[in-house]
Length: 415
Image (tube, rainbow, N blue to C red; front, side, top):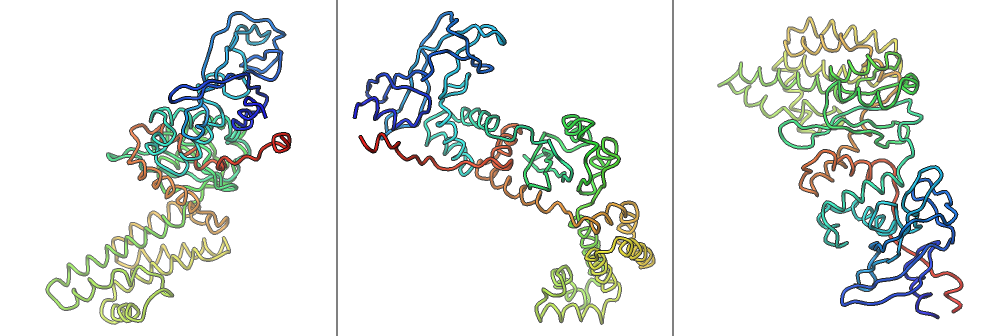
């Protein structure tokens, strides 16, 4: 087998000829050229029928072989394209503006999905910032052609990026679980950018939008997509009641300060917050003690459990009626924290009932957020929100990368 043929098999490049090579102390420089004779435009890919200008030597970084840095060398031409004008020739092993081969970039992106950027930088022998640029090119090449196409059910949430209340807004497609859009900020203007990118025609096709009870997000959705059904995330609705219950418990502890009952109530927090079917024997006894000795706190506990039971229902009209009854009960309870919850539930009752109708929550979004927090922690944070957004698109938009595994061609095996 000729050395150039062996190198061609080792490099794994398609539509590429190996014409020569030489070694330096740390590098293997391989001379290559496109397999096609007619040069093609680097912009549109059309043949240019040999109409060329000048040419200059360029190098592209490829995957290392046995510890040697591999560079591809080719004298690339400028061509005159009928559509694009004078531009650089297309080469089959790399993007027009990239100094790396596509195979090298995809290996970098594969490691970036699973390790922090510093580790990827040291392993692949490239600069830290270069890893981010490679990620952006891989996402543009392998990501969805139009991630915003075909959206009907979406979820909106925010993710904390850094301290001092820096956030990004994330939009998820409920049908696939993939993140389709992200931008810095968490206000109505930020979410409006998403609807601007979506366009009026596709915005009109939105059927359901799940959000928390953020007034900014509510306004943005109602202004841009008034026909879409707003669904408030169940977790945030129930959290209102859980927080109110804890406020009542703390108020009772303050009121009974210095008495033995106060110490008993201090140890009931987790028992009161848990689902009844998850209580241990000891926790069941604590709830029983609250029932006997502290009626205001037990009334708050029943309000919390009743709200959860209503949300477990499947009938929309029944849920709406029971929520109305729950609001009346909370208003008569003489518990100030639950008076506030009752006003909130009354204001957003249709969005809460929307959960009963659709059973959609922001659970998948929270799952993505946990994944993104892992990415942030392993990278020790991101100085620029756009760097995190690039990682979001790489890891959470459905791009599937696999380790490099190749089999030799039949011709090589026979040789």
